[in-house]
Every structure is written in structure tokens, then in C-alpha cells.
Length: 270
Ligand SMILES: Cc1ncc(COP(=O)(O)O)c(C=O)c1O
Image 1 (tube, rainbow, N blue to C red):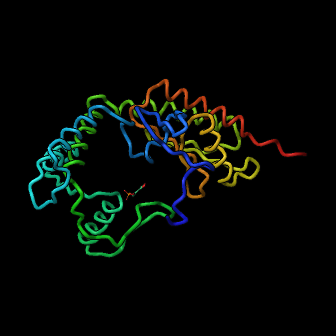
Image 2 (image 1 turned 180 degrees about the vertical axis):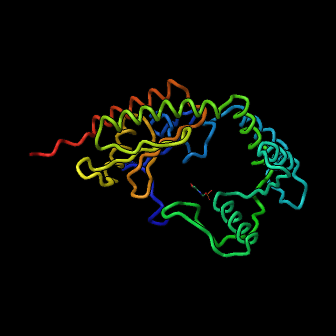
Image 3 (image 1 turned 90 degrees about the vertical axis):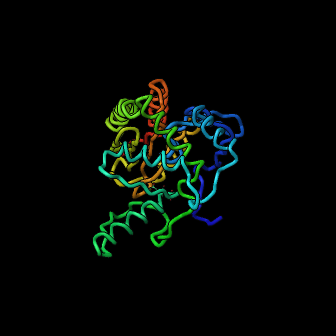
């Protein structure tokens, strides 16, 4: 493994089991997962509908055949996405990663504008490769195309976008209160359930990445998993799955509050 492929925490966490919004490690400790696969796991873990849909697909024995043959699940998913996009005459192109999706978008945009100039923001992250422009044969395989509509249906049927907005506001208001009370916490921000706040030196306001590490470590000890990031590595990233409940949000807010108090820096000597 390359040296830069690091894990979170001084003692890495090894998830062995997960259900709903909780992850259980090999020692049997159970943690609410408020980072959700770096915001990619919208529905939480072990959703029964998801499992049943995948089981049905696996029972056919077909998980990959290549796009040389018709994949009905792919066509249905494309129609589903096109209908939900609200775009007239939408076209859908499947790839297998965010990196490929962004590369394809860049390629399409530069071809369309006949220019090789793009505008990018400093320190933003879009994936690992700009050079990969080949079409992946695995994007849109029968297994992923069976799973995706199940997730989309679940989001719509349970009105999870609305719920994410309500729960996000509740959690953001906790972050705002914390930043108001603690000078080492600042810049509470976010959309829906994608939230963050920064750890700073209370005297200078400078980013404090070590304090952010300590905060994530202490949250884990208190039983809550959150993420780290930001331009100066001093941001806490808090993003539970869209299925998160009010009780779970309040329990997480309680841990975040306890840790903020616990790690409050001592006032400077006068
Ligand atoms: C904003 C953003 N864009 C692109 C990517 C790349 O996605 P992938 O790892 O699936 O290639 C990521 C991955 O974390 C991301 O966070």
C-alpha cells in the first residue's frame, strides 16, 4: 500500500458488521456512522430491499456480461434517471467511478466548446485521474443497475430528501450553537446532511488540524464516527445517511457537544 493511503484514528477501526446507521467493529463496539462512506452511502447499511434486489439479480447468475449484449436493467435505470432529471431528451452514460464521471464531463465539455481550457477551484477534489478518457465496460453492469433503482425508489418513497433537509437543519443548528459557545470551533456550514465546521486556534483564528484530529479521535471514543478534511485539514465533516432519525441526530449532537467541552483549550495565561 502507498504511504499516503492512510486510515483514520491512531488505532484503525475495522468494521465487521453494519446495520442501519451503525457500524460495529471487531471488538464489538457499535458506532453511529456519521460519515457514511464519505457521503456515498445514502440509505445506511444493510437495507433489506437493496439486499433482496441484489439477491434476485445474483440468483440469475448474471453479474457482468459487457455492453455487447442488451442489459435491460441498464435501460430501465437510464429511463428512470432521465425521467427524474427533468432534462428534455436526456441521455444517460454509465461509468463506474466519480473520477471517470468527471473525466467524461471534462472531455465532453472541452469537445463541445472546442477548447482545452477549464476553470477549476484551488484545493477542490474531483478524483484521481484526468487522463482516463476511455469508456469503462463495467459501468452500468447488471448488478449496479439493479441496485441503483432500488435506492432511487427508496429515497422517493420515504421522502428522504425532505427528511435530509429537516435533519440537516437540526444538526446544523447544533453546530452553530457549538461555534457560538466555543472559540476553538468556527464556520458551521452545510447543505442538507452534508455539514462541516472548523477547528481553529482560539487566539489567532488560524486552522488547527491537530485539534481536528483530536476531535475526531475523541468522538470515536465517545462512540461517534465523523470525517476530517478541508483545505487545511482542520474541518470536521459530518454527513450521516439520509435515513438518519431525529433521535440519532440528537445523540450525535450530544457527543459533539461533550467533545467540544472536553477539548476546550485552556485560556491563555495573562
Ligand atoms: C467531490 C468528489 N469528486 C470525485 C470523487 C472521485 O470519485 P471516485 O473515488 O469514485 O473516483 C470523489 C471521491 O471521494 C469526490 O469526493
